[in-house]
Length: 371
Image 1 (cartoon, one colour):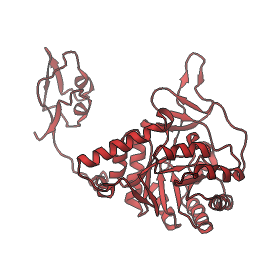
Image 2 (spheres, helix red, strand yellow; image 1 turned 135 degrees about the vertical axis):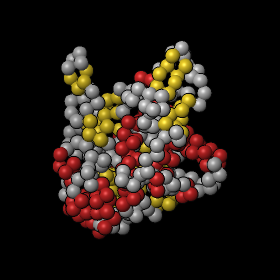
Image 3 (spheres, helix red, strand yellow; image 1 turned 60 degrees about the horizontal axis):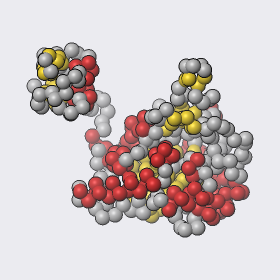
Image 4 (spheres, one colour; image 1 turned 45 degrees about the vertical axis):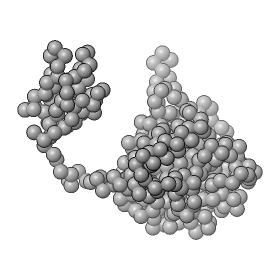
């Protein structure tokens, strides 16, 4: 049994890659991530000209995280020292690079290749800055940027895409046509985390990137779309906290995954926990190689017109065991569930078989059956 994967020609000891972010902001942090067991690490986004750093950078209110740190505050030339530190004990390092023109981004890519990184990730989908957003939504611009970078280096080039587009399939195909080695998705999503109603001010003073568990469904949808549209390997990003989340992405077509917010909230030790649990699942399910489950759920994702509507109704498996719980009754917008004297009854003539009561029941005591 092995966790090892071949991702765009790189031999990863496991599919867990630490994503670009403050947790990979310099050589020492990257080295720590690799020592913690990551299959690879993506540097914090590197730019050609570093402007004044922005503070504060992060807001968290118990669920998702808003981050307004744009990119690394280390000069391009200084990254040679940082990469030397990062790779002092071996390990795969991918440079995240960002620019607004093809010539500039290909220049940065060439510099990073000479410095010694193993691959490039093009960060073309930042939620901060209108110019980058427009570029991320343009298949033509994505094609040109990718083509120029691919032509300028001899190492793999991965392109990070955003969920904030309406033409994900077209953009994925543009990356493939331009010679990209892989696609990663998704970048953080533009957000305002919330407002302090006492001060009447937002928690952070500008739009930022939203990450963490709330964006996982968006990431899963994007990975499935890309996997169905292009033949390139996909790296899934967004809300990965557990081994189950890794498996979800892989079953929808991902070869590897990136984690960032989970590391920020739990530390690098969280990588080892995910790996341990993933290995245990593989052993329990007699899976020898992760390629056995890659894309296993992809065939079940169909267009709305293709799906077969099954006329099922809700059914209580056994008597409700929680006397004061009425979650299923309150959630039924069709009025099909009632609770009297602690017993839940279902009117099949009103039930439309939407399945919400089954998911919302704390005991998972409701199932959908054929009428």
